[in-house]
Image (cartoon, rainbow, N blue to C red):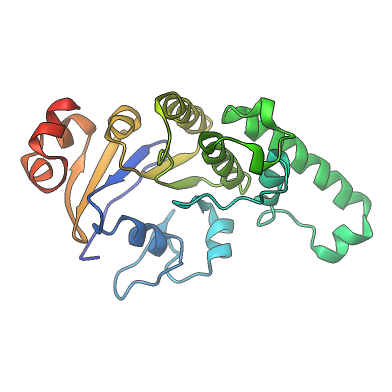
Length: 239
């Protein structure tokens, strides 16, 4: 990365786009402490989070998904989402094993919240279905619900539309709007330009590790530097 800097404001859906090798996944890894930058810093709500351990990043209010879904295949949709809440629950292993009254209530609350999050992303009918039995597009939505279980203020989505058909992409867009409307800010790395142009308030464009443009979708769509570096004249005309 080379001097990449941008702000994300509360209530936004902000997209990060760029060709393969532009640095999009590296950017997410730096933001969530999977990689440490050689220089620069990541600020969240005015506090520096650069170099914190990933689980502390989650507790601070930032959660993410990955390019490849990483679900617990033998667990139900609800159980997968409940697992995502472990970073923000109070009960540890021994308290849970002893089945103390407050841990039982906490587990009940987590289960109810998991069911709500599944409804939020459009998976209410799949609550008790094992993840292994769910279609690819629904698995993407399940991973988003699991990330939301950590109660993030900012949700980072790494190519959530990868491999989705048109109907699944529409369902994803609708879920993103509902998540945003509930107060969660979203930053999304995505190659599906139709989805990006539809849901984004602002777009950051990377090319070979540098930021080459930033702005609302209509300006990005017509930016000659972006067209030359990434979209291409023919594809830009189709957007």
